[in-house]
Image 1 (cartoon, rainbow, N blue to C red):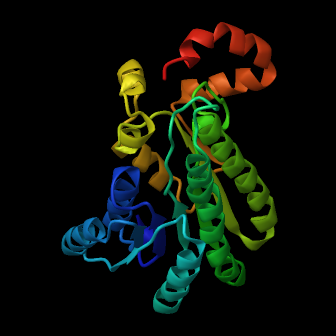
Image 2: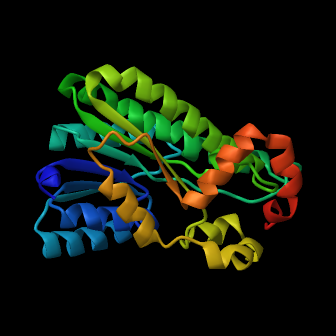
Length: 263
């Protein structure tokens, strides 16, 4: 708990789901928060609740992570207002489950703009401060889809593969600056993510029994803040599958064909 007190933590996509739950747990441990999302009303309500309950400072900014100009403008304001940046949690993201030939160009661009480019630009805006401080922690919420691609998620999986590649490179770049870089790779989480990703509800129905709860995922993430965790993989058995997939991809795809076709 003590390592959180007075620290400044920025969270994108903080208006709901695991973003809001991560914010609550960080506030509970005494951290000051900068919460970013498109829904400023939801952020204002969360700010009021967290400041009243935990007596911490909470700053909120309306931010569309697909708008790189807006990212630069907002992050400049943040750095001026709070000074030190201790943690950035890149949580904003979305997916749309379609077969490759059905995905529209706008959907492709949208997923890459939010999940990849937006994440990179947010990170770019805090790197100079963290390098100068010679401390900090960047946490990128990726996905098990970044390790095992499945049918009807070709574009989404491609964005998460990109996030993992970026995260791994960034970790090595910052190793000498005492800045930690962690990738979080969860399986399906019971949030409103699937209202957009899974319009027909087929996937949610098929995987409901194995879906992770946002409170569980958020706690796993917050417990690793300010530690040199390379990855957080949830659930563990799913990560074991990704290791087998890396070693025996053809066999894994053949035997797992039925399990992959849940969407």
